[in-house]
Image (cartoon, rainbow, N blue to C red; front, side, top):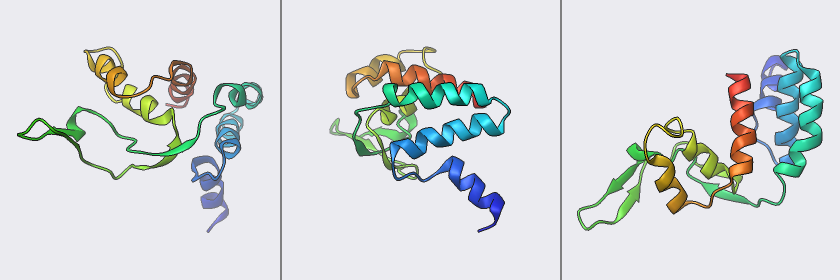
Length: 131
């Protein structure tokens, strides 16, 4: 692995601990010229993203990946992004799947998943700052 690849892996994961995930976010801010923002997040993210077990998640829950069989049974397809993430991450990824409030997707997500609104707010802010 080249130094550049190693550097990319340290920012993109995979991560063995939540502290590594948080440090990767911090390092991305530092590398993009915002070290003060990175230091702030290093201090506050452990308080926001704490207490969540790592669970197996689909990580791409959206309408097109939910099939309703003829008998009414829902069936989830397209597991290519599945993996082990903090418990709040399924909610976060489902909520960003359709731009939040363009329709009633948020109602259905709230009916099938536990809602983690604080985590959603923080991660969405970080996502918007990066992209």
